[in-house]
Image (cartoon, rainbow, N blue to C red; front, side):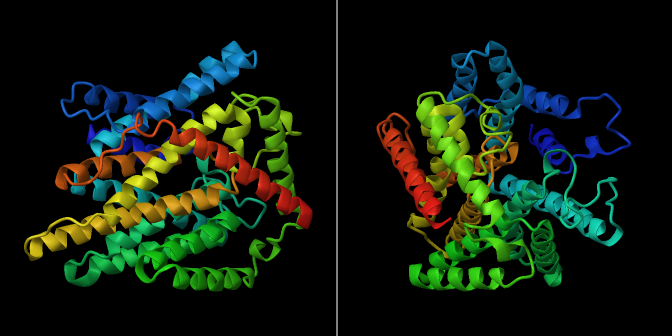
Length: 423
C-alpha cells in the first residue's frame, strides 16, 4: 500500500504522465495507481477511521454534490463525485500509510524531491525559455509546469509546503555532513523557485512561516518584528510584491471578487451557488480566496465542514508541540525532540499553504488534502507512541464549528468592507 501511494504522490506532483512522450498513451496512470493503493488498503487490519477528518471530508463531498442538486444541476453531483472522490480516496490511503516515523520521513522526502525537480524545471525555463517538458514561461517571466501546476501560484504552493520539510530533513546529520548539505541545497532551490514563480501569495507565506517559527522559538513580539522586517524587505524586491497595496489593479480585483463571493453567499446561504460556479456568477473571474470560495460555492454548511477539517490539522500538530510527556533517559528525550520537530514542520507547512491560499482559489486542490493526510497520519502514529496525547472527537465539538464558521464569515465581511474603504 505504502509503495503505491508514494507512486501516486509522484504522479500527482511530478506528473510524468503529462509529458509529451506519454500524454497520448491513453493509459490513465493516476486512477490505476490510486485504485491499486486503495485495494491494498481495503484488507488492512489497522484501519483508524475515528479521527474527525475522515467523516468531515466525506461530508464535504456530500455537500459538494448536494450543492449542485439544490442549484438545479443533478449531473453536477456526479461530476463532483468523479472529480473530488479520488481526492477522498487518496487522503484516506495516505493517512493510513504514513503513520510511523520512517514512513512520514519518506513521504516528506518524496514531497521535497518532487518540489526540487519542478524548481529545477523552472530554472531551466528561465535559462532556455522552455523547460524539458516543452512548457514555456507564463507571462514571459514566471515559471510554470504541467497539469495542476500550470499556474505559477500553484507551483509556489508546492514549494511553500515542501520548504519546511526540506529544512527538517536537513536537521538530521550523517554521511559526514553531506546529507545536511544536500537538504540545505534542496531548500535553497525551493526558495529560488518561489522567487521565480513571482507569486505574491507564496512570498507572503514565507513571511508567515518565518514568523510562526520564531513565535515558537522566541515569542510573539520577536515574531512580529521579524514578520514586519521581512515584509518590508519583500516590498523592496524588484518584483510583483512592490504592487501589493489595495488600490493596485490586481489587488483591487481580488477585493471585488471577495465582495461578490459574499453577495453569492447572502443569496444562497445554506448551500451556496454550487462548486465551480463562482466564475459563472462573477464575469468569469475566480474568488482569489479559498475561504470565500467555499463560502460562496457551498454556503455556510460547506464552510463549517471545511473549516473544521482544516482546523483539526492545526490542533493536532499543536497538541504535540504543547505536550509535555514524562521522559526517562537521553534516548527518550532525543526521540521526543524529533517528534516535536516533525510536528513543528507540519505546522509550518500548513501555515505556508493557508497563508498563500488566502489569496488564491485553492479550496479543492489535491495538494491541500495530501498535506492534510500526512498531518493526520503523523498524529495517529504520535498518539500510539505517546498515549497521553488528546484524541479529538467530532461529537464533542459539534457546537463549536458553526460558531467558528459564523465568526469567519463575519471576519471576511469586515476585512472586505475595510479594504473597499481604502480603495
